Image 1: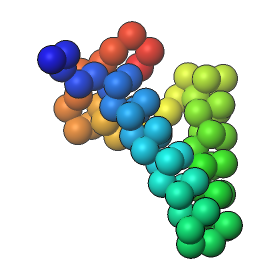
Image 2: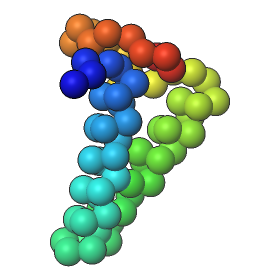
Image 3: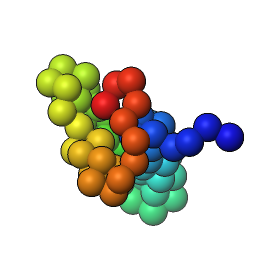
Image 4: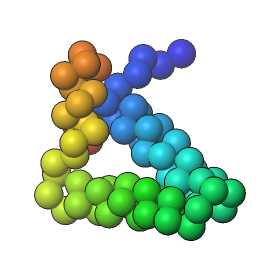
Length: 69
């Protein structure tokens, strides 16, 4: 089992948030689709600027850096 790195944690956490936003949008209220849109926008911003708030949070939690972060 590979150790958890910041890269893997960011990808896993954002994937969960997108799926949760889609499920809540389907079954609770369409406004929940905004969660998936926010996460997608944050991923685009991270790709352009190189700064990811989730990565900084995971770094402060003590996860090891990966290739991207």
